[in-house]
Image (cartoon, rainbow, N blue to C red):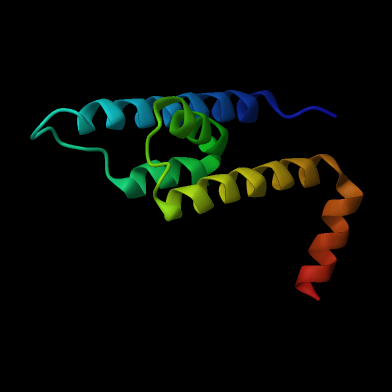
Length: 103
């Protein structure tokens, strides 16, 4: 089974945007007086499915790597999305967890 094409396109786009945002914010941080990208925006991109891109951006640009919130939440949301995608592709596992959580 494969993922629906719109979901694949969405995930690619949100990950590319997430990585780009980390790069832009790193560049903005070096300029005095330049407006920064809010941390909540960076974290929301991971939450909305861009965790891999955000994680790569963190490592590639060495940005937000010392902040505990980013060190925990970006990988956490990445793992959550991977699990959700895996579960959506495995109908039996999804049904089991749905019944377990609802009951």
